[in-house]
Length: 182
Image (cartoon, rainbow, N blue to C red):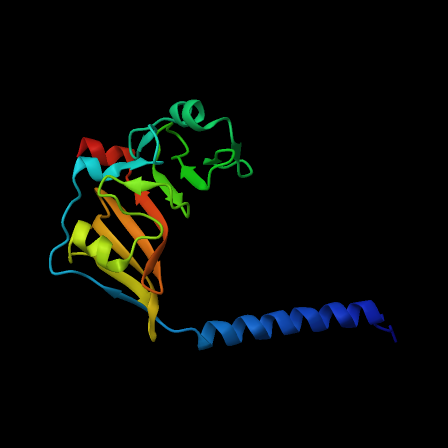
């Protein structure tokens, strides 16, 4: 009869423990909730512009990788992906695989602002004052402090504010470069 080594028992124990924790957390997590507004309004062209507080403006759905590199530096890519992160700035930019046009801009840096002067650090009240009540609220059932406020129409482009405790903690602006042609 073959004997199982103590290392094998430890590895099997760790795998079982990780699986049990994963199953427990997936069953104990609240259900996702999505509340749609009565009317989803398309955003204005200027809503896809993000500024870093200086003279640099990023136009989501139009900016090229070369323009971001020129304005923010060479940066790095994650693996072999189309996700760019500039040096010294807290944002990432995502590009479609076969196009050199910015698709998603995401930041947790309070210096970046939308044209309506909102961004990380803004209060929910400031966002609603700037964009209105017509947003999609995405959250977890039973958690009223953490959720996303999504403005716009997904097929045309969105501006999303991730909220925690009444303040914006992440800004995400998305626009498929093909949406400009629609």
